[in-house]
Amino acid sequence: MTDSTPEETPFEIRPQYKKKSIRSFVIRAGRITDGQRQAMEQQWPHYGLSLYDGLLDLAEVFGNDNPVVVEVGFGMGDSLLEMAEKDPSTNFIGIEVHPPGVGRLINEATLRELSNIRVFCADANDVLEDCFADESIKRLQLYFPDPWHKKKHNKRRIVQAEFVEKIRQKLIPAGHFHMATDWEPYAEHMMETMNEENGFQNSMPGSDFAPRPDYRPITKFEKRGERLGHGVWDLIFVKS
Image 1 (cartoon, rainbow, N blue to C red):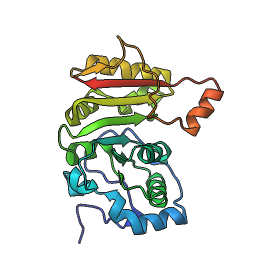
Image 2 (cartoon, rainbow, N blue to C red):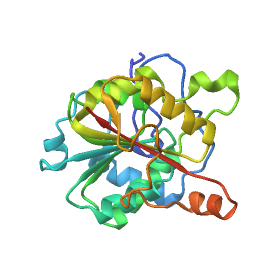
Image 3 (cartoon, rainbow, N blue to C red):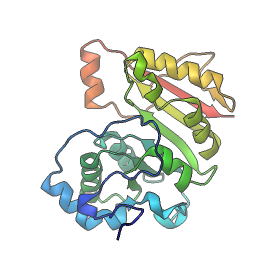
Image 4 (spheres, rainbow, N blue to C red):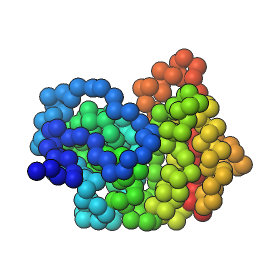
């Protein structure tokens, strides 16, 4: 007998998908360490969220009504963990398709005894559509997504009109959509896309990029890029 949803064994967690569509990501190879595997075995019921459970009751998930910040594609989780640790009055939900990153986040959250963080191992488009009520997210973070450098692959970039509209629906009034990239052509693409969409206003005058806000940590990757003279562009748009 087959089931329509994949078997979800915590220590063998696989990315969850619902729709067949153009993906903005590829699954990178990577090994889950013993510590990450153990954390996923033991702590998935506490930290893990499933796409197949449908609409979230955020107050029930966290046990409070604190504002919610969602990060799409958190990688290995360093920035998200730091933000959650520094801001216990905000709830954080990470969405990532890379299992070792999910394992590391759960392991570190356990070691740091963080109660204000949860994680999906799933496609962000599916999660946003099926798991979040409209006007439920204070800030949506998209940091250093794959820029898909080749022109023929530009259609795979996650920042497209349909994705932006989905975010607009999920943000609370005056909620923020915060993007960051170290690839200037992608920064320009983000700016152009956002300026063409209704329902958002740039937090900066005209088409200016934003300075890095204090709440966004500087990653090791970003520091290395700065030493090599690479730029980083932040865009913060407010739901109008």
